[in-house]
Every structure is written in structure tokens, then in C-alpha cells.
Length: 277
Ligand code: DGL
Image (cartoon, rainbow, N blue to C red; front, side, top):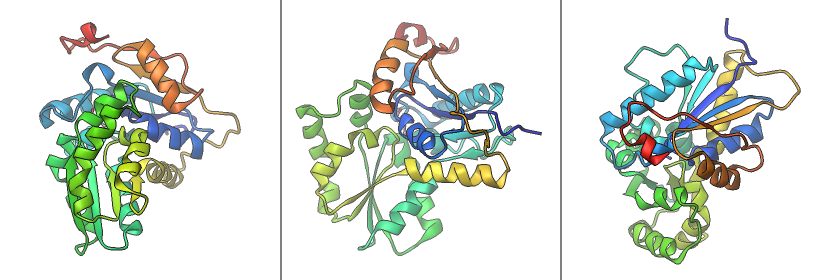
């Protein structure tokens, strides 16, 4: 029998999933968390889906070996490879980010025109189009890949002129498409919501799946009778495959004081992991 005191495992290619970790900590402060950021191999978005799928399996295996009670795939690019569906190798419950984001967007739109921004991998997979169709067939989805956004976040840049220029270029077609709701379909993007909201204008509702995903985590834990009932604060562990000092500095800026004592776990299977770390 799985004990409720075990940790929740979470992963992303880098710092972006910390937006989901933040929401989980806020909603479920008694839960312990193990977060893995695959910074040495970030970004995932421009990579071949089969490669990303392999990374996602490798990290999920690592979290299962840590005996987590539930895994949160805090990475749209990894989720869009559907790595967890066909393997049959996981008994651990898995919570993902795409469905919660789509549900929140459908609830928010008034003119039935939703925009999606994400990585090349996520947009090309059409995973959001399928998730939307499962809910509604009368809502239009306009998608746009914004690959450079992840690089800005990983470099800690959330306000430069260069970022503003890039955001204008990426988002102009979505403004022309007259969407009234925009899904931030990459967990890095909520960290750029200032510039994205500025460019899109205040009439457009930005949807980050972080809060909706945290609510889904709570619901799954309740269903499985795995909510940690102890009253103390949960423990938090952060592991990176890349540079500890960078993860620590930027992670603290994005997540807050809960981020401390970052561990380093390089991948022996990645030739450039050591060089990057
Ligand atoms: N934060 C991730 C996502 O939600 C991955 C970004 C990347 O590594 O390209 O898609």
C-alpha cells in the first residue's frame, strides 16, 4: 500500500515546471515534492519527439525510483509525446498539464476563439487540438510556436527590449486572429506573462495551466486517499541535470524561498551533459 506521506514527483526540461510547483505548494503546503529540471538537455521543444519521449521515460523512471506517490508532467513538450500512455510500465498515477489548461480556456472564452502558444514540439503534435475537440467542436484554436521564449526564461530574462520585440513578432498573428483567450501552452511562459499580456492587450485572458493542474493533483490524491494529512510543511527537493548554481539562483527568483539545496544529477547517457553542467 502506498503511503500518503510520500512525495509528489514533478518534472520539466528546466525551470518552467516551477510555475506548476509553485501552484502545488500554494494549494497543498503539507505535501512533499521532488522536482527534476532537465536543464542540461533543455530546450526540449526543438528536439525530435522520439528523443523527448525517451527523456520523459528516463525521468519518470527516476522519480518512480524515488518512490513518489504521483507524478506531475509539468512539461507540455514531454506530455505531447504521450510517453506515459503506451508504455504500460507505470502503476504510479500521472497528472498532466494539457487537459487542465484547455478546460480553463474553454470556460474563459466568450467569442470562441482561443489562441495557443507553445514549443515547436507541442504545437506540431496537435495535442491541444485533440484535447479541445474532446470537449467542444465549436471553438477555434489558433496556434503559434514561440521557441525563443524558453531561452529567455532559462537565461533569467523576463523584461528586455529584445524579449519585447520577439514577443511582438510571435504574437502579432494571434492578435490579428482576434482571439480573446490565450493558453500559455508551455510551463515556462507564465514567467513571461507580463510581456505577453502587454503585447496582447488587457482584453485577452491568459490561461496558465499551473493552478488548474494543482487542483487536478488535489482531486487525484483525494480519489486515491493519498492526501498527506500531517499538519507540518512538506519537504521540497530540487534536482537538476545542469548547473546547480544557475538553477539555484534563477529557481529561487521564480519559485521563492522554498528553493534551497539544489541537487545535481548528470545523465551518463548524454554526451554533452557534463559539458553543460
Ligand atoms: N516547459 C516545457 C513545456 O512546457 C518545455 C520547454 C522546452 O524545453 O522547450 O513545453
